[in-house]
Length: 169
Length: 368
Image 1 (cartoon, each protein chain N blue to C red):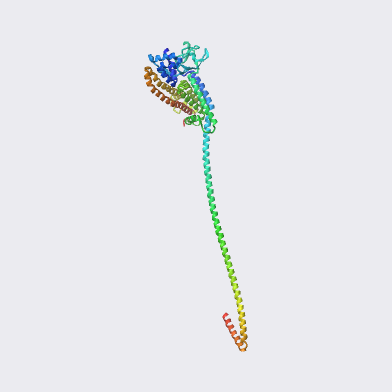
Image 2: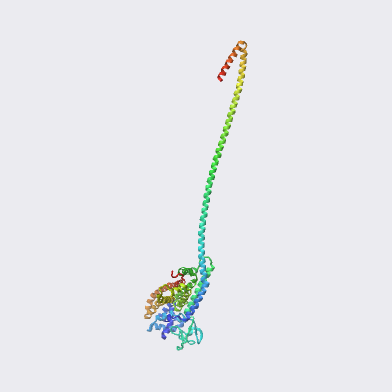
């Protein structure tokens, strides 16, 4: 029976000790420990959340970078294409201009040549006519030493003129 | 009776320390060669050796064990060496008397009109005096409890300091041992049993758990300052259960009281249900008290009983005692390991049931 009979002294000391233990531990141990543990848990959770956010942010940035790169690449392509087109245009224009110029030069040369030729021909005709006149003069002077011959020639010339007029009419 | 009394201190000294007991086992059976070890107690040892090897007198392991698991006014260390503890007695006629328990000389002498009876309780020398004695002595259990509590305070406050010193850093050192326990109690005991309002009751649950756990562990240490049967004492468990009882009934909300006095049963059943519910309110802390007391006391008894086998067989024949001792030590070792588990388990069960009762008392929608 002694074993299951609580001793008054032990009950008293236990009450005192346990109350003090509860008070001291609550104030100086459990409160700081539990608060620190909670704070740390929150910090860890927050850090994990932040890491996830940072990762998402980075992914977004990467995506943006890639987009920018793709845009830049596309722009380069268009610029190059435009440049090529412009180059082609310039070259063809230059070619055309050169062709025109050449044509113009050639035609002017041709004109000049033909003019020179005509002038030369005219000169030649005049010379020939001069010579012919001189020759004809000499011949006529020789021929027209008598009247008959003069008359015959006039008639002949007149008939020839007639024929030519008929042909042109 | 006198012979037994003389023999008692010697034997209980064996049980006060398993480690020192090994030496004492040898000295018991080879008392003749080992008298020198106990220079101060040669006479007693001679007497003992003589009695054990030649006399018919029986060793009473039951009494030895009972003496070990009960409270005492002095603390046996080894042999005849014991620490006398202060006796504080209050009586109406004499007021408060404070003196050392060594004045009683292990129950042989009376002092200031008091003496010790065979159960180590303080009684009047004059047995016809029926005045009440309030014995508030610092007994073995009180001292053991003080030592355990101071140890607990030092550990926990240093852990708390580590937390504030290493603010925001990873746990380090001793914190790594304490933190899992606190986390376990917070998440798997308090949070799961009480719910969202658990934080208010964490100090009580943690204090109960660590008080029981530390005292259980100290009780398993065979040498001073351990070995006292603190949590296996009904007074200690009674106070713990009383704390739980008062807390639960103090914080109980209207649903808790409605469940007891206006349960959801036909009115005719009230006559049966209400007494049962009231009985339940009292029985729950009562069972808490008994469970811890019985488990820890039983553990101490079993370990000591296995150990006593050596002396029981040794009393029949010294060589038989030797033959049994390895087996006995093996069993004791096994039981000690088991008791380590029990030390944790009982502290956990007490804390868990406390949390469950608190949860029941503050539950909001009891009859959803």
